[in-house]
Length: 289
Ligand SMILES: Nc1ncnc2c1ncn2[C@@H]1O[C@H](COP(=O)(O)OP(=O)(O)OP(=O)(O)O)[C@@H](O)[C@H]1O
Ligand SMILES: [Mg+2]
Image 1 (cartoon, rainbow, N blue to C red):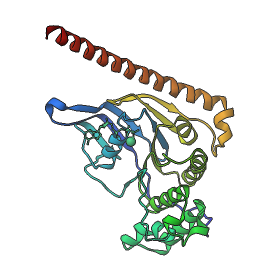
Image 2: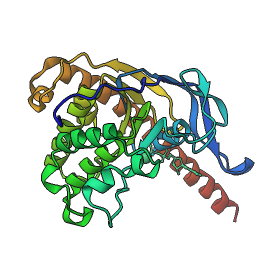
Image 3: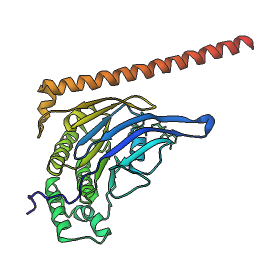
């Protein structure tokens, strides 16, 4: 029973970001983080956004989740504007959200129980997920008794049991050691392959992006925009060795890296210009003094 695939009752959603800009701060100190940005998170696909640290990825996630509103443009789910947070768009953050006083099993069941929907179907789905994330032997353990990787797996199950129309993940494996991270890619991609929901996954790690994605969005530096959309047409299930051995995987990685490198150079040259302007202005002032 636990091994059987659960037929999803929920129809996966499609998110669209259209001409979105987002700025913070009062008028004279305004900082634009997202600039005229457009992309689609396609239905039943795994879209990975890869971009430089600090470019505005989490800001986009807050807009998609409905925690914040854009300064311009629209964010829609299946054509309807997003006006606030809702259970149909579930966000998994990097920080742990497990309740330390609950066992793995109770953490996984938290959502359905809190909604008073602990049905036979929910329990079956919980069992299925528990096995899929490899925690059946840790069912009665508390988060403090789990390793970092196990905690992340428990969280994946805890999120997925809620059957959101879109799963949004903000660098969920950041901070894990390389081996644990690769194990997480395997667990997570198998779960995705068996459920085929709409997933939006944000990362700074190109290997992670190429291993997981159906589509990769390569982002510019701040204020962020989409620089390229790359279809990752590698067969599934994927193996870690594909990342090294497949020519196609390497081509995709090179393509994404060259864009990110150009972005880094651009911001570096902007940085040096700012530094040069500052020195020049300082010298002028010093010579007047
Ligand atoms: N509420 C806010 N007020 C002011 N500035 C903000 C706010 N939120 C984000 N920023 C600024 O927006 C920029 C982008 O932040 P964001 O967290 O979206 O980047 P990120 O791409 O997720 O970075 P990382 O890869 O490090 O997680 C940062 O320079 C940050 O200072
Ligand atoms: Mg972030």
